[in-house]
Amino acid sequence: MEKWLSYNELAWIEPIVAPPEEYAGESEKYCRLIRENALIEPKTLLHLASGAGINDYTFKKYFTVTGVDISEGMLAVAKQLNPEVEYHFGDMRTVDLGKKFDVVVIPDSIGYMTTVEDLHRALQNALKHLEAGGLLLVTAHLKEEFQENNFAYSGSRGDVEVTVFENNYIPDPAGTTYEATVVYLVRRGGELEIYTDRHIIGFFTAQVWHDLFKELGMEVKQVAFKELYDPFILGKGEYPLQIFICTKPL
Image 1 (cartoon, rainbow, N blue to C red):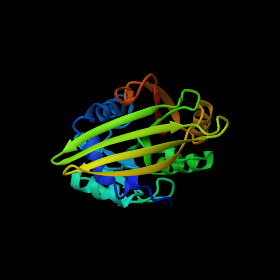
Image 2: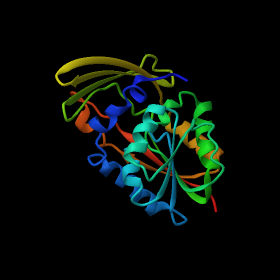
Image 3: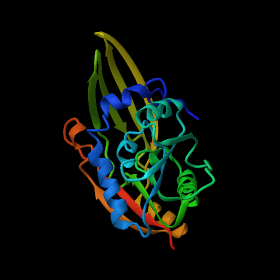
Image 4: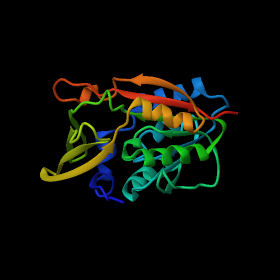
């Protein structure tokens, strides 16, 4: 497993550049879609690749939340932010919690599945943790919609100021991955520290997604989500996302 700075040594930065109160609108949208589309009353929620717990800050208002992440740094931040949530270390492809949930969500990190095989494993494992009639929500970008963009994020807390630049680059248009290169400018008490990180992210066509859901026996509804990253794009560009809302047959 690759050990990214972003999710380990620099995990403490996440609530500074993405304060949970400011990102509650995204999480509330997911909660609304869950309630509108659930076949059974959604009481328990499993968040795969839960990161720093930014979404869980809102999820826990509506559900009993369990989170799973593969980065110890992110888990430490999430536990501090959401002491009410039960967090586990694990890989979304293989973790086995030995119980089922009314809802399983992967709203942020499905892109770290860089092959169709890994994507299938992650979705299959999510399905394994889902009650009959339960709902799976996954947010992804489609290959046919994706374009190279530059982003900037910033935030401050006390004497710490953080600016983050991200560049997305497609090295092979025929492939299933793109590169996200991230530069961190961190000032603590006025002293500048500079870090860089590089992530390989998977993206797949709508046909691949729908074929996988069909193979897994899931009923699927697709909702466009286009405005989330607009404020952070430098220059002209778009970063459309798709929300897949899948139900497991009763």
